[in-house]
Image (cartoon, rainbow, N blue to C red; front, side):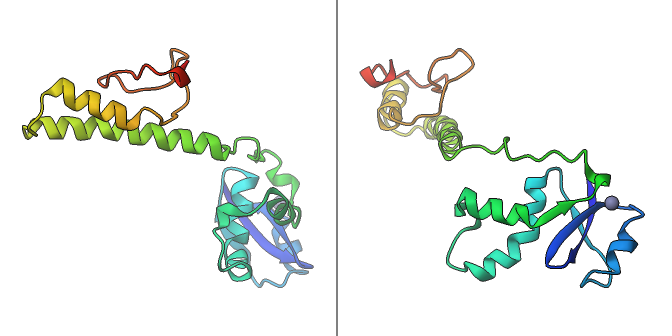
Amino acid sequence: MELRFMLVNGDFKVHAKGCRAISRDLKTSDYEKPGELTADSQREVTLDLWDDILAEEYPEREFSSLTEQELASCASAISYHTCVKDLPDGWDARVTKREAKQLLAHYVLDGALTSVADFLAHDGGIPEDEARRTVSQWLHHLNAGNGEDGKRYFPEGLPRPDRSDWR
Ligand SMILES: [Zn+2]
């Protein structure tokens, strides 16, 4: 969604592009013309509008490491005109750190499968089943969450580890 924003009395005010109230709000704004922004959720708006400010305030910190309270206080300084009432808030859709790490493990496991294929294509020097078993042993503790079958995800093509912590 294409949006326009401006600072009014220290807070951000967000409108849809083309909203007729923009010119009215500009009169009380510090901005001469509205800022432009494309976002699909209030969360995206928050991250976008606060990115530079927070980078200055917390130069040593990654933006993604901000606490929920810090993000909430950023969000509370943004108001949305009725013209953007359909913009989803997007806060619930946020993945937890645990889910993010499971996704990362998923990529690593699938990457290992590609690596094994490359290794075998170059005749790496050990038999295929030994290569696959070895990689499974290296990677058996990666938790990529559950696959579509409801069991812990492990790529087809690598022998599934049989360990007590997998049950
Ligand atoms: Zn508006």
